[in-house]
Image (cartoon, rainbow, N blue to C red; front, side, top):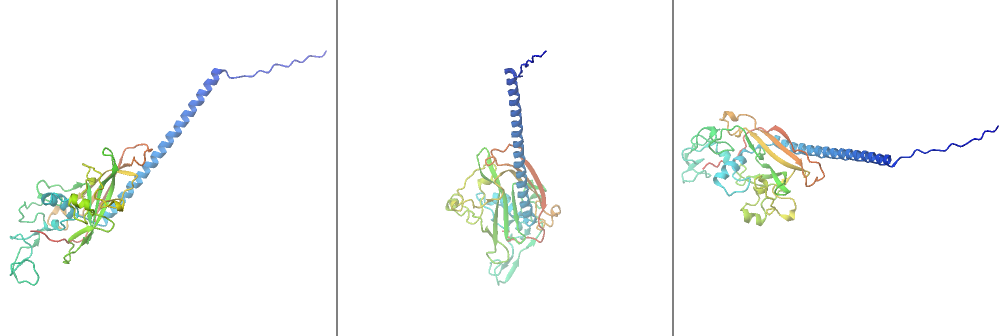
Amino acid sequence: MRKILQKKPITVNAFTLIELLISIGILAIIVVVTSSLFVDSYKNSHKASVQNTAYEDARFIMKQLTDEIANNRLDYDEYYNQLVYIPSHQAAAKTYGQNFGNYYSQFFNPGSDNLLGYECNDHTRNTANCIVIRTSLDKQTGQNPYSGKPVSDDPNSSNAFCGSGACGFTTKTVDQLYLISADSKTKTIFARERIGGSAENPIWAISKVKMSGNDENNDGAIDHFSCADGYECGQTAQCQSADNIPGGLPRQSDELSPSTAQFDQSCDNSSNGFIHDFVPISPLKINIKSLSFQISPVEDPQYAFSEINTQKQPQVTISLTVEPNQTLLQDAQAFSPFTITSTVATQTGPQIIAPIKVQ
């Protein structure tokens, strides 16, 4: 008997609407989580890249500063000029490189008449081919102030950074670095200068200016400084008329002052673009948050040979705080500024000869 074969019905297992919605939801969650992880990974990678670049830039700047310090001397004369002499005698002065020799002269005792050199029989002093009738007590005392000066004889009563009073400190922290070559023919200044940004969030760079020394009276000692080639210093008529800045000298601009932090290029020659007295040397991708130099000792040990506390090799400790320049790196994920420090000794050698100006 033939069997009758019957086909079994084919059944299809389909997703219900609820299951489909659940699957789409899970897939969406996976996509969102994956995308979020990818974005976070990109941000972290970009942040690390920006931070590494900032570290490299900071080390690059630190290397420039340490090399300059190691190959030059501390310019105690300029510190004395800016912090002691100008505040006492030239309150309106706004330039660097003036009064070279005033600090050197603090270590010379001119004698009872307070004049250096010798008196001639025609009542002139220090003239050529004269008959000397009287000499003064000219000697280098190795002490600041020199013995007999109307300030206390105590060496702690003054130094290159302090004229009189509470000057007993052994180190001094300043915001500008003044260097001079061993032959006194070149002065170099480093400072933090505002180069842009807003008043609330200024952008700062490390800037540099160099000055060249000249012997104008041909006596063998440098007596006059002016800006070196490549630096334009107070040359515009507007700058000279507004601030009475001698031509050829770099200026103490408000752009260098953290307290005022103005951004004014009125003293710059616009035809020369970005070239002016202080020229930025740090990469524009970073903002120099702070910059300081701790200097020790506070007297030139070659001049102050009678002051025991100063008899050590001068050194500078640099403290540099850096962050990204957010005006150029707006997509960079913010991170806290970082600080690097370095201590470096200066060049050593004989005294730097400067004019004697005790009067």
